Amino acid sequence: MRGFSHPPMHRGEKSFGIQMLSVQPDTKPKGCAGCNRKIKDRYLLKALDKYWHEDCLKCACCDCRLGEVGSTLYTKANLILCRRDYLRLFGVTGNCAACSKLIPAFEMVMRAKDNVYHLDCFACQLCNQRFCVGDKFFLKNNMILCQTDYEEGLMKEGYVAQVR
Ligand SMILES: [Zn+2]
Ligand SMILES: [Zn+2]
Ligand SMILES: [Zn+2]
Ligand SMILES: [Zn+2]
Image 1 (spheres, rainbow, N blue to C red):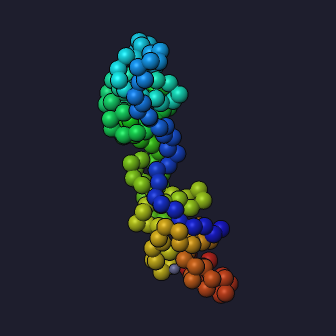
Image 2 (spheres, rainbow, N blue to C red):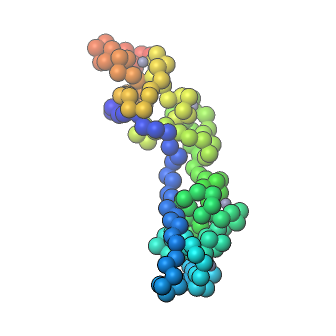
Image 3 (cartoon, helix red, strand yellow):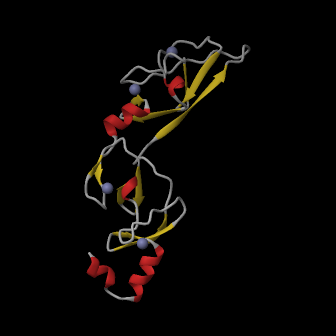
C-alpha cells in the first residue's frame, strides 16, 4: 500500500459547528432548544439545526458555554459535549503500530490504513526518516517505509522480510 501523509488528527471525531447569529428585531422570536423559552436576546446560537440561548448551549459535563469555548460541539448518545469531555469520555485509545505502546485518547496520531502511530513513531522504520505532510510513504508487511527503502526492498526481493 502506498499513501500520502496527512496532518495529524484525532480518531473518529464527530464535531458540529456553532454559529452565532444576531436576531433581527422584526422576526418572530425563535424557541430555544435548551429551555424551550423564546429567545429575546440580541444574539442566538444555531447548532444542530436548532436555536439556543447563549447560556443554554452548554456542555453536559462541565457546564461550559460552548459558544464561548469554540465554534464546535460534540454529541454522542444525546449528550452535547465540549471537545475536552468528548475525548475524555469517548476518545478511543489504541496501540501504536510501530512501538506497540498505548496511545492515550488525547494524543494526536498519524494514520496509515487501519494503523495508528504516535507522531514521533511515524517515520521510516528502516532509516528513521520522518515524513512531512504530503510526503509519500509505503506500508509493507505492516512497516512504514520511505520511497527509497521501499524501492530498494523491491529490488532485493525478500530484503524487507529478513529485516523484520
Ligand atoms: Zn434557552
Ligand atoms: Zn465540557
Ligand atoms: Zn509509538
Ligand atoms: Zn527509509
